Length: 188
Image 1 (cartoon, rainbow, N blue to C red):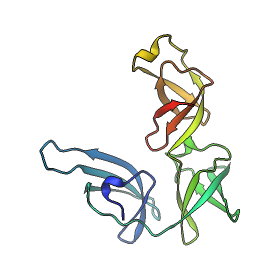
Image 2: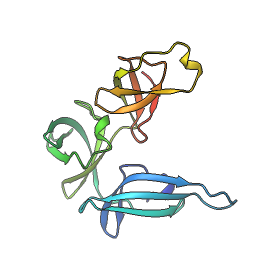
Image 3: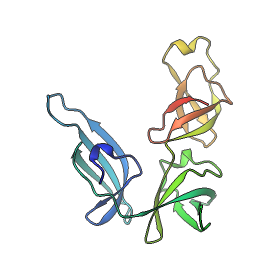
Image 4: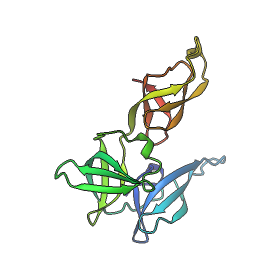
């Protein structure tokens, strides 16, 4: 049973007997001493796709949904559906683009480090690895001496997403991105 402070995007929590996936997490630290951090969590109901907002203290206990976790590999996109293949029995699982909207920009051809959550043999969602490496395909030219400053510029990656990167990076470089925050971590 995870605490509210341990929640991560993509986790599946059981609320009133229904699985909900964590979409966003906002933490607010109160200014008074002794007060605990508050977490505002936005969930998506995995059966009805409705949004639900809840607030918790950092040590509130939550119930993780009882689902099976399997390793899958991304196979291909079929229209608006993403097809994943079970690494053990090679069965296929399909998720719509809406189900993985925030994660789609980090999925590359043949990606293997993906965990799928199944309930009653129906795929509910996926968990991506903590970081992925992607190539910059378009960005402003490199600026000399930019490593001494903390300024950023927009870069488009091979999957089509755009993120902020340091000014010293150029087109063609491979970078590591945090999949939970969507932020630049380091050069490869």
